[in-house]
Image 1 (cartoon, rainbow, N blue to C red):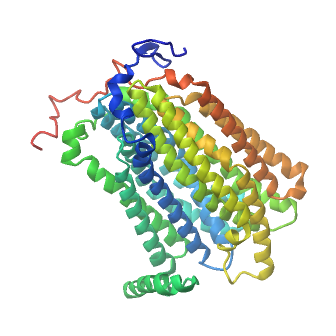
Image 2: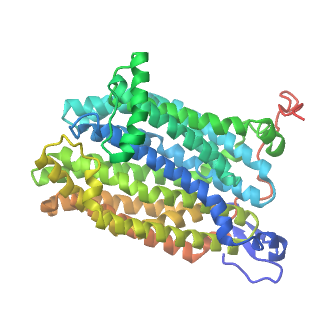
Length: 546
């Protein structure tokens, strides 16, 4: 049902519950429109969100760089990447599903009922813990068999299996931390997430040096910066490792550092979430119980994003773990070379899209708040502004990918790598960087519009189109080019991936422009979370907090 002109507001129809909601007159929210500027409002939320994603990117970049220094063989980067993407694939469904906590919290914030948001955060936590127990724990025991079934190199199988198992053991902290993060994003308090992420990433990087290299230490060849700053720090960490008797752990050390950082990232926001201040102001302690209404809402709105996220990661895993090496074999190359350069190029793609994801999280929260206020016009303005910023940033990244493609790949290649192999790695990686540059603007469109639609509660159609296009393009076109145009090597699968992002950006952009999302609402009468169903038996824990 389209919007109908009304002198007192806008008539809106909720497709989920079949009710019509009358939007509040614009004059009731003049304070929002009279803020310094929409851009200033956007930046207040977006800057810490973008900084958080950027910190993840820097951490992943540093993580990959240190792993590449374990030895001259490219196998370590491939093993870490293969193990990591398997772990993320197994956790992806619940990570995607609980991402809609942001939408519920922000819409309730906009509706003037922020205390409702805590119930969605708690139920998101219970969903995450249950998912870990039912799906992740059993999966830990079959990881070695999975890698043995798809790879033949025994050293690679051992390394990637060990890394994946350690990550999976500790991934429950990451799953829970992301749920709490979405609560604070929806509450428009992204600084909480930034502080926890920076702390966790710092712990991760320090432990990387300590555990990967142990008492042998790590030395950087980075000119004056390496001599004056990096090497004294890594030298001090090596001395600490020597005094503690810590021998180099290699790839296992990187895994232990990652899960330790994950627990730090969970504990910090959780402490604030259950603090007396938040308990008094937002009812965070009294909302801890399971709520049928919250679970239904998270399932109804979050199912499509959960399936979309896990499906996309599965397709990208097929690309990186199967299709890219297969393309290398098609031209008679060592598949490890093509796999390694693909993972290296992906690190630079992270530098591009992770900050864009940060901005999209802010856009989701802002769209959600405006929709809770019954102001889809303001929601549209903020989504379009976020899109303009994202297009500008990722457009610059595309130029950098093309102009500096060879030096960027060379950064991740160990100096001890034989010259012929080094030249081969750079040549393959440079092709991938060009493919990545082609889809940057379309990726910006897809990331931003998907988040805006999710903030409004429009998740089913984007989920379906994402699943269809990913299988058709990444798997179908990618595999087809390996066999029909084997001379392309691993570039064939990357062409399929590029086509996927281009078409997805166009499709989601069309969905957003169509405007059906403006008729949706996640906040309706009768959809109250069950905050206090058994207070007579279990008293309110906030009593006595003052």
